[in-house]
Amino acid sequence: MSPSSGAQGDHLSVRQATHADLDRIIRVEQESHNTRWERDDFEGAINSPGWLLLVAATTGEPVGHALARTVADEVEVLTIAVASNARRRGIGQALLAETLRVTGAQGAQQAFLEVRMTNTPARGLYRAAGFVETGRRARYYADGEDAILMSRALGSALSSGEADGR
Ligand SMILES: CC(C)(COP(=O)(O)OP(=O)(O)OC[C@H]1O[C@@H](n2cnc3c(N)ncnc32)[C@H](O)[C@@H]1OP(=O)(O)O)[C@@H](O)C(=O)NCCC(=O)NCCS
Image (cartoon, rainbow, N blue to C red; front, side):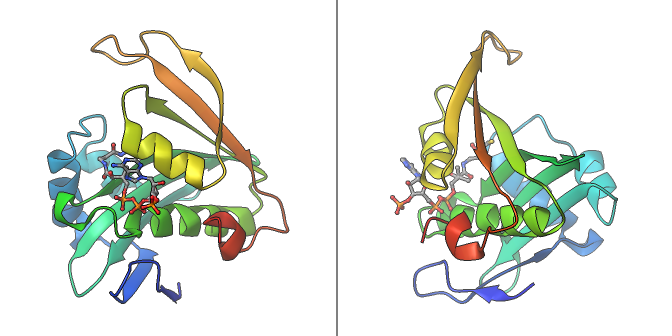
């Protein structure tokens, strides 16, 4: 995967995760309070058909990751998390764009996801990448919060520029 200049000022690279990245992925996941996804989920996704686990790194260790699963021609973006001290620098956007680029190139036509209603940063990230809200699942999460459903078309014409809204 090619380097990206999505993070302002930093040289950001987005690549497939390896087992060596797992400790760091779990740390970022925990500090993001994203408790739905466990180490086994990430480990099982590495090099598994239909699954995509990407990490973003600026200088060394990963500072963010994205997990997605493709079934038939639909990709579900399962989670994206960025270390709290690296947010608002385009890293989430770069991870999402690369997820859509890779899965689109593999044949996915549609991307969808669920996001907590109160998760303003994530809803902003997805909206900025062209996702639109398509529905709501009442009390979807264990704590009773609603989920917002979002989707966007991919298609063969998708380029990384289109994917990240440039
Ligand atoms: C959601 C998350 C991944 C965004 O990552 P990020 O690297 O900070 O996002 P980016 O810098 O790429 O932001 C891209 C766009 O998303 C939107 N956005 C990001 N953070 C935002 C915030 N705090 N408030 C409003 N919009 C926000 C903006 O449109 C932003 O573009 P801009 O900076 O040009 O205005 C990050 O906040 C995070 O890890 N949150 C905790 C984990 C989580 O909730 N993940 C989603 C679960 S599905």
